[in-house]
Length: 360
Image (tube, rainbow, N blue to C red):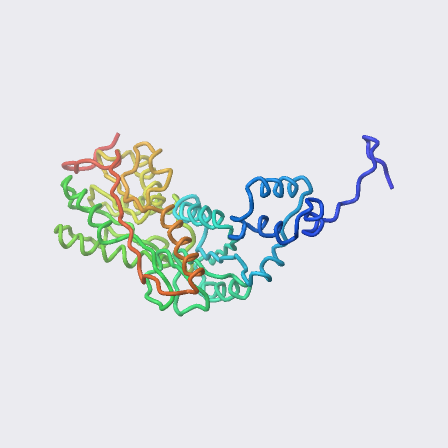
């Protein structure tokens, strides 16, 4: 065996300390140590100084509770599955932060699977997660077509499936607020980025736009309406590039428009860059409204006017609702929980210009 440069002989890897060894070291019963280390409700009856002594000794001896032994004894897995189309900087990441915080706070481990909009994976992944003993599922912007064997909460799922609680923003109020804002600034020729066909929100948000446009007497012009990722079989995450290219496509039509209402902030950010590169000013020539209010929206130049979805709150609420259903044995729960949207007005919108678009 070779000797390292410091002259010390490497020590063999120590075997993990067992619960019994820790209990003997503390001169306490294994049951007392177990309830403290597993944060069991029974630990409330144990004096605080005793619990602190147990945790200190566990840290010094590098003891870790046996997850599988705990699961078997309690007949619980403390695992949740989370299914998402993808995880990116914006929408999904903000919701995931809320889900993660709530699950970690309650001592749950979680698996995350990304299906990238592929129908086979959307069907198979929930079954694979259930096979791995998850106690419940959170499905983010993922369609649910049938009842699942475990409690489930869908964020922006929209389908009414027995045993699945839906959490969504009120798209009617959201789209009306955005279009009313533009109408109040005398915008009548408005371009639209419609959501890609892989998003569960696309249909509901577009219905909201159609209703709002009818009430506000705004004409929706097909030549000024572009669907994101329209030719892609399995739409992926939204990227600024698609907003950039679709904005160029709008400008190439030579059709006059004074505002753009984008499906999400990511595509709106790309469009703003394309308008600036074309020598147009935002909002003096074209006003831009996004949707979601991701973190980057308030740091642009100009800052983006957008419809705020309470993304982090949606994640926290989904996790709380799921854990409550797990604790109650998948009992009764609301079919749908609607959250209020908020229009956040910033510098990317202003009064409609008169005449032709002016260039810098």
